[in-house]
Image (cartoon, rainbow, N blue to C red; front, side, top):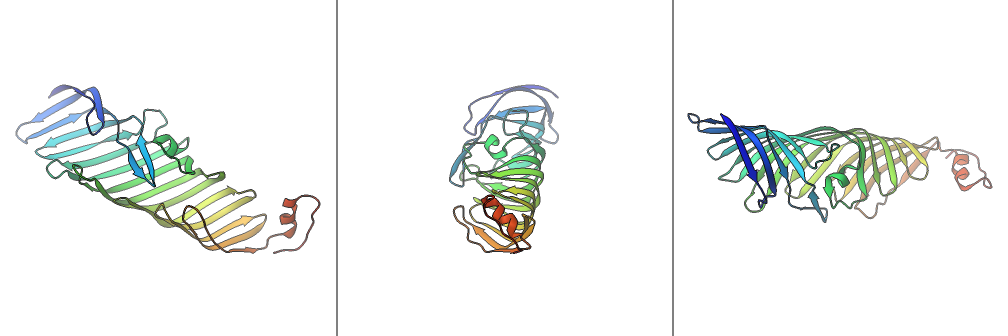
Amino acid sequence: GGTLDLVVADLEAGFKTNTRAALSVNEAADTVAVTDLSLTVRIPTISILDQRLAFRSGKIEFAGLKFSGDSWVANGVLHSRSAAEAVPVAFRTTLNTSRMDGDFELSVAGKVRQPLLRSELSGWRSDYDLDGGDLTVQLAGQFSGLSEVPRVVASGRVGVTDGTEHYDDMMATGIRTELPITIDGDVVHVGPGEAQLAAVEVGVPVTGVHFQLDSDLTVTTITDVKATVLGGEVRVERLVYDGETADFAVQVEGLPVAAIVALEGEDIVGDGIL
């Protein structure tokens, strides 16, 4: 046992550190264990949805790091950036250094206090972001090809409670959902599952929104939409959005005509129920 002064900088993988860690060697078991190790991380840019994204200077805090032959086992917490409000990601991973493959588990249970994707991913330009709420993520899978073309296959669940989000200038509040997520190489699939929104601002107040969501991040399918608008009920059976257009039929019931024409000004009056 003892301490290890470790200085590493400008590696191709993007890891940099200058720290002291506790070191333990078990010659009989042919293992080396390191604890209380922190790394500053610069992760290379990645491409998602035609966007070149980069993690800001982050930090990995290893609770444990164990080497035995060509096997590595590690667990700890990843912060994608140094700011105090960064969402922490707990992880456990194994790596076979001969095959350059392994498996991993990730979990997130944190509060979002600012636009999540824009703050965590430098280069995020999408009109969508999660602006606040309680975020939970559970993800487990395998990775391979680290020495050539990296590939990740994983599955899990992502949940949001008391969330707020925006898409362009449309705001939604009171978001509650828990959706399955799968990753297979560069294909990410979210859903199917239910989502609820307390309110959506689209020029008129829309409340009590419920729907089913299924998306591969390029095409999103929303079904069984129910919402309250101006005192009446609005339903949409199916909506498919490809990032540019969405054609859908709207059914309305119990919608007061007076409330609709009032949106046009005091000079227009009407009566009845749609």
